[in-house]
Image (cartoon, rainbow, N blue to C red):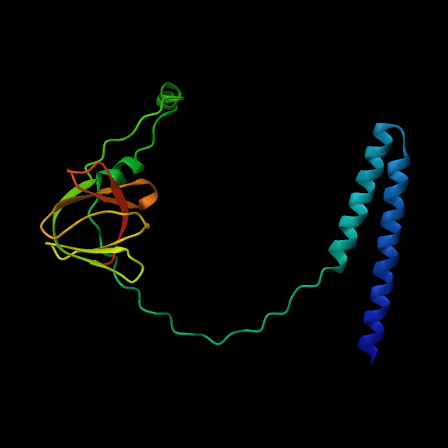
Amino acid sequence: MRLGWLFAALLCLSNQANASIEQTLLECRGLTQDSQRLACYDQLAKRFQSSTATTTIAPVVAAKPAVKAPVPTPPVSAPVTKTAQAAKSQPTAEQQVEDFGIRYKEIEDEVTKIYLDVVKVKKDPRGLLKITFSNGQLWKQAEAKRFKLKAGDKAFIEKASLGSFLLGTDKRNATIRVKRLK
């Protein structure tokens, strides 16, 4: 019961303090000279800062029982690639000034296009192709475009934008977007 009365009293005091701050804020806004207005706002900020500092209550945290820490596993070193080495080397300020505004691409030693032999072509219930290649990979057509492909054809898969892949043949000038399943 006492706690309820104490809480109600604090609530009333905080409402009065907020009303006082709002009133002072309006008075500061009414001042015409810039220096006086700034001084008024500074005094208001100091008063607000001191009132919030005294009313801040630190949260009580209960002590948790000690838990045995897991045993860390030794780190496994991965082979360093050329792109990782390039990312580690930071260009100098002089080099950054020289290269500013120049758009260039780094040459990567990464495979961007592969040729595979088609072993089997099936259509799913939606009419999209499921293509099995000689190396065991299974790819599925990702867009509803008409594309003729049969077993025994030599097809290529190349990287496209935003991490997607395109499938096509050298006989045709068309490609379809595909997604790897297996």
